[in-house]
Length: 176
Image (cartoon, rainbow, N blue to C red; front, side):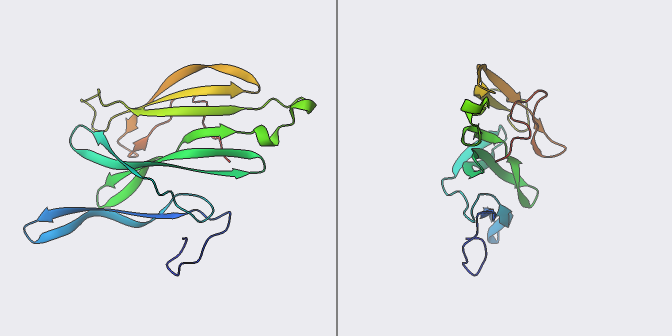
C-alpha cells in the first residue's frame, strides 16, 4: 500500500516500509529508533521478506531485502539494507542485485544485451570496522560478452552512513 488510506499504487509508485527498534528501559519499552515512511519497492508495493542481519561487531543489526521492477524491456532488482542511524532508520545500501536489458535489445539488429547477477556477503571477518564491509560477487555479460566473475569490496562510509560503491563498479548508474 502506498498511503494510510489503503489505496494501491501505480507502476511509478514506490512502496512504503516502516521499521523500528524497541528497547527496554527502567520505564518499560521505548522506541530507540524508527521511521514509518521509508520509500522502497515498486508498483506501490514494498518488499515483504526481510532478513534480520548482523552488520557490525558491536551488536549493530539491520534488515536486508530485495525488490525489483521492469520498464521498457529493462528489468532488475535491488538490495535494500536498513539499519538504525541515531533515532532514525536509514537505507545503507540500495544497489543492483540483478539487471538485464535483454527485453530492450534486438540481437538480430546488432544489439548486444547486458545482464548482471550478484551475490552479497557481509564480511564479518573485519571485526575492526564499525560496520562490516560487503563482498559483492558480480557475474554476467556486457554488450553480449561474458565478463569474468569478480568479487568487489564495498566499504562502509561512516560520514554518509552508507556503503560506498568502488571505482570502476560495473553496476554504477544502472536503472530499470
